[in-house]
Figure: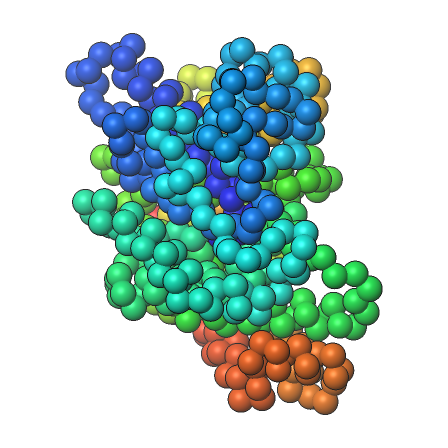
Length: 511
């Protein structure tokens, strides 16, 4: 839901399809007797007569999706077909255009659907892409949570969107749950709330719903208004965050927030949505990895992941994220970088209430071989943190491990950034991604409550008051939002874990 979410989604599906192809090649070389491989890609992909398609729906504004599929930053695709027909432009893998695409490389700034590498024969655009009618990027403002009210108010627009979800559900043999990616501080945050409510009311009351909120460098910039005063912009930012947190927590089980784009080898933030969304795709891919691992190699279902992140059974949990992503090597060090502002890198591991680790392509050593099970992943983690000067707090920790490194598609944006930007590029990567529930989220909610009360419930700017009225938010509505935030904040107050050393004995039964 939204431009940032769809950029992340395009990179994500390219990664998934690359993994599927890699597994099929390994199975072919090893022989059919080796079984179906370690990952069950049927969790994320559905097979059609023309090829595999993601189990997804993509919603965005007109103007963020390509209307001329044959042009990318001055590169033309000579097909002899009309531009209105679907034409492939797979940026990563087309051999004929390899040299031309290399000239674009990491400077690509085109539309997200132009580098989504799906078989053109499936006519995937008509099946998975929807643009909201009457709303255009760079013409209408869509940078406020309330902007989604009018855009999603028409009954026919809602019904068409819900129909796309129902079709996907009907194709599932065993539904695990839903994962929603959303630019949640924009108008798509409100649409995400409506979508969550529909899924919870009409499709499932029990299956887990996980939202990945994309903000800052991971989100599309939908602002077109200029000249806002600093006070008004500050109030809008506060309202967006408060409204989104309150609304989305009503129906989802976990709300993962990505809002700062750094990776383990560079301190400087990643510039540009195209590059940042590639990092986001690696993180989201890890979030669903445990759900698709076979034979006890992963965490199990999406419900198992949610239970790890939400051990107290609270209705919704705000989840922070950190990652150590690097080219394939044998290193046993752990250098996590925070991707969520409320838990900065310097505070990682100092007070989390629960943690879930997803590890890919790790090696115990050159002699020990790949980390391929939960037990081996835990042992690797214990060795990696053994030299820490500060003690690791006791908390529930779970691990998922994939012994295979993450294969990268051709010209993947991070392939050169991970090697320092030189001429060499990484073809695969190892990663440790941490998802955690941290008391820092409770403190952040306390700050948000105070700021929202000051901005919306105390006498303030007439411009802010009129904006709230345009969105249909009266004083009672603002009081309900504040009460919801305070309830969510209180859920962190009693979640305290004893601090102590984390070793193989003290951690027994918590993995």
